[in-house]
Length: 334
Image 1 (cartoon, rainbow, N blue to C red):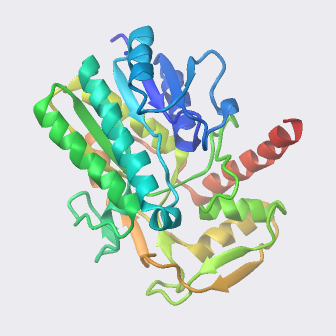
Image 2: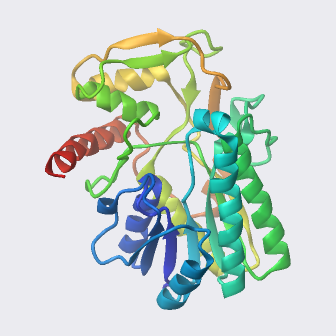
């Protein structure tokens, strides 16, 4: 089948830039829309049409849809820092919910039939079980999770009323970088554990804070399901193919490996890969951190022909480390 041109919003950001590479690797025509508040121009591959602007700019969206003959949207643009969402809830409801409403409205107006949405395990809040399925209660405990859940409801209602189908992918803890070193997590001051740990291993920060050692887990530290960003990007391409194959079907799926690692296990893995010891500082728990958050990934495994290639903690750390080294060069040259 001929591939539809895909608009990737937030395509200059961390996960969006990996999705762009996955689409290109599979032969899809791609263009990127990003306002560059957290994205980087260097993350957009050469030759990919790039529009700097906002997803709520109706005139710009109409122009992109017409110029690029867009047939599908992958939507990554949004704000993602949980503690900031608690301090600035209206920013998150604006960036993640209101702006997405404008994007969905523009897609419906233009007759774009397929929409892939970057959702989050934060929609589950603090689950009563360690392994959550898509049918687990959705009870977000912060505006970030709620702003994403509201978008899921908007998409479901819109798909019932208009000829558009969607897939909402609920990510667990995304980490790592493109194995070929083309892009990676470039945000300064990132809060993701593996990113923070490889920065510490390379001397970019002095220590890693461990938030809470009194959780009900084997070693007392929080357990999370870490997924390699390139495996996650691959899932988006397969999800798009599934939407095109069955235009009446909408999908909501967890994206994780279905197994968890504790904070200390992650730091041990970084120590092994770098052959040095990161300083760990024990601090109190952060508000709203569940003890364990692991995906039940049975649905995505049954629905898509998705075979994760990088489901090893060492691999994730190795790729994150290689990108962190490369980022130093990029910043130095820049």
